[in-house]
Amino acid sequence: MMQANYLQRQAEFKARLEQQGYSAMLVLGHENIRYLSGFSGNAAYALITKNDCILITDYRYHQRAIAETSGFDVVCRDRDTESLGDCINRHLAAKSHVAFDASYITVAVWQDVEKALSNHTLAPVTGLIEQQRRVKDAWEVEQIKAAAAIADQALAETLPYFKEGVTERDLALELEYRMQKLGSEGMSFATIMLFAERTALPHGNPSSQVLKHGDFITLDFGAVVNGYRSDMTRSYILGEASDKQISIYKAVEEAQQASLALVKPGINCLALNAASQQVLDDAGYGEYAGKGLGHGLGLFLHEVPFINTLTDYTLEVGNVITIEPGIYIPGYGGVRLEDDIVVTDTGYEVLTHAPKPFII
Image 1 (tube, rainbow, N blue to C red):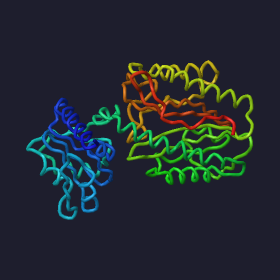
Image 2 (image 1 turned 180 degrees about the vertical axis):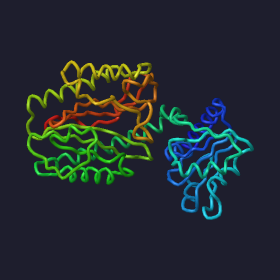
Image 3 (image 1 turned 120 degrees about the horizontal axis):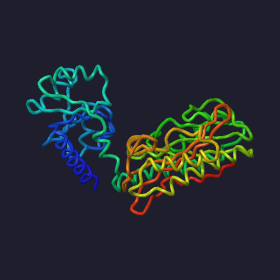
Image 4 (image 1 turned 90 degrees about the horizontal axis):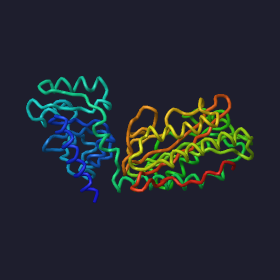
């Protein structure tokens, strides 16, 4: 099944290249390489031409690449005797018009490659593969669902540890341990676990801060299955909430529901963002709202489509996105609620199912 998927992706991408007027593309991003080939390592370069798909790696990953890839010829480059540029050059037709994945290579490495490709026309491109990746096939959705299920279960197992005296760092480690124990391939990203006034940091690092009665708690985390990531945020209060804390939580909860109510194929991301922002404005917290409502999810943690005030994108069946409104009040604290959803023919399906009890 997956072999057919990879071959279909390759054929579609070759057609995209031809439409753009390129005879080849050098793919440098590891996630983009994995999407097209199935190779899960991180020391490889892919060259896509009209007729061929070539994966260039070295002795460390050669056999693994052969086992994992579909539709690719695997080339084992001897790094001591052949430069990367020379290896690429010998697989290109004369005077090729070559696009390259400009976001995923250092200037120093590219300058070295560029010398060897001086007889070709080179063009930096961004987003070409990402545009293809924004609509997920059924297999991709299943991987994200599996990652989300691991995160749900790990949180359920960690909640009993949310007690006075525990530190942010200890809880984050407990949650990460349980995700990996349940089968996650590492973390989707560095776990965010914050207490009290530190919850006003949208992306703070766990610290030695101790949890106290009445504190805000924000945790943002995710698991990984076959390279595909989940991303979920929950916000709590330990023990007892003040009227202001309840008001903030209610505003975020209603903002998320307002945007979710609009999700369906054909809705513009600008409308989703506006619906959420309107609720936060009406509640009196608009100036403290996070910038942007959500993002696409897949092999990248953040990928197209993005949901903000700038992205004019109409949702399609198969988009997997996050909906994550937040309020962040410096010196006081904040609340964010985030769920992963997939756009369906009739609306959407929620992939993250951890309960949202505000008070624990």
